[in-house]
Figure 1 (cartoon, rainbow, N blue to C red):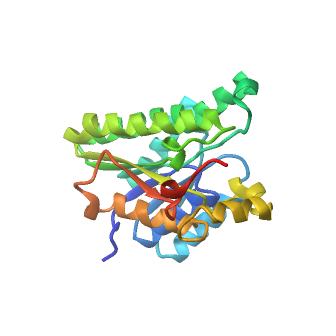
Figure 2: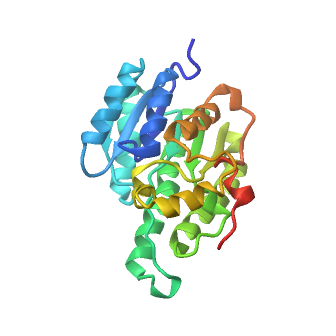
Length: 256
């Protein structure tokens, strides 16, 4: 029997990168997966195909986590499609590079809306349904090593991930009595579209690899493996923690 058989998972930003890897892994573990995306649906369709090839079931939902109506519709869609929602993976995220003194208000608002406000209210909608149905659940946030580690030029991103860490800790206490666990997974440098510029800049890439003790970038599959554990019954007594998946980067990183 697969570890997540009979479970229903919502994964935001599942049309590409880490979110896609997570959706595929959860599907392979037997979960029914709600694939959230914004923009071009082709990536979500690819994810659905891969989930089904892995033996899972999937539904695609277009939902922008910065819009309250979309947030409510996403949770409703999971219940309508599969009769429940047991697992929420808050993966959708963005970053904007700018020196602190040049950061425009619009960039700050957008990064915080996607990375922190969206997970806050999506988790709220998810928890309300679980509470009303008297069901336990699992919440896994895809944070970043930058919930703790400095990242000059990305102050908005660091603020959003630091906020996510504190939200996770608070909700672990507040939702524990409902049987709902809450944890963060903090990836380091991972091969995804968001890192395209880095991947194409060999000197910068080589410099970064020199700071990673395992000597390679991570993959979406590396992150997905940790998410699958935290979503499973094996992690039933695990809550309120951040799990770093970074090849040792945090322990060896230093600004030049």
